[in-house]
Image 1 (cartoon, rainbow, N blue to C red):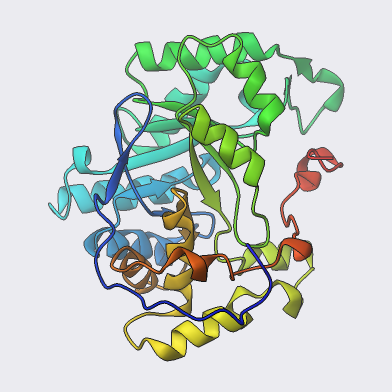
Image 2 (image 1 turned 45 degrees about the vertical axis):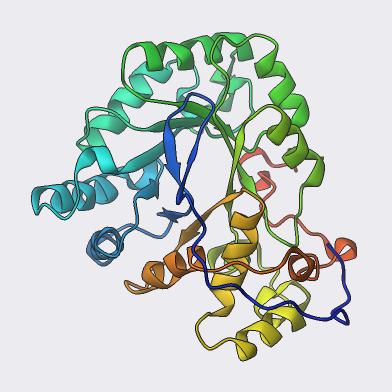
Length: 319
């Protein structure tokens, strides 16, 4: 990555990124781009999920807070024969409140989703305690080894095809790798040109753990929640993105940024309430840009984390 845009551009090649799926370390296949559902909370959101599936989305990332709406959309799409269940890759998460019993937590998630299994179950936060919002004094320390053994058992029971983690750094991953029988397949983290976690990515590449990226476009609710929006962190204003957008009528700014992720082997998870947006986002798989161009997106001196866990823990857990 670099900050200058003075280098000569190479042309975009309009060849699709193939294959359009990658293999996880357990040989399960995962699509290259997914729909994030943080905004999906009502009937309007349900229609976004259904339309996204119609348009070709096969990876859907959710969490307990909105599994009912997402599950209703998935099952309606299956019932209408828009898609088969086996063609979807559904992800949900173990939250802090249920660290002590991942099996029961996943069973509840499956009930809300109306599914018999998920394709990937993630430990959402690298915390060793069972978080109790109503009574913090009743928080219980849960050893990492204990939680991960229970996560592994979910695979053995057929409740999930794969397991992984979210918001884990290298040290957290070392802890898991030192005791696991089943390695995490995925680490879902904040990753984008303004938070290019090079060493984490290199470690995950070495251990064959795929990175999912949330907040890949650095847009929307992440700014609103943290009240930190300013033009220094607007990828759509980056000179190289603007130049490429003007130069090639076939692509959009969002597609350029999502393609940046995929070119690195990172799977972007994008949220939207626009029913046509995911069709556009899927178009990010249809072209390639020379590596020299990608190095111009973002700025190593302007790195910033937008989501640090302080809304949950009261502190920056990455400190």
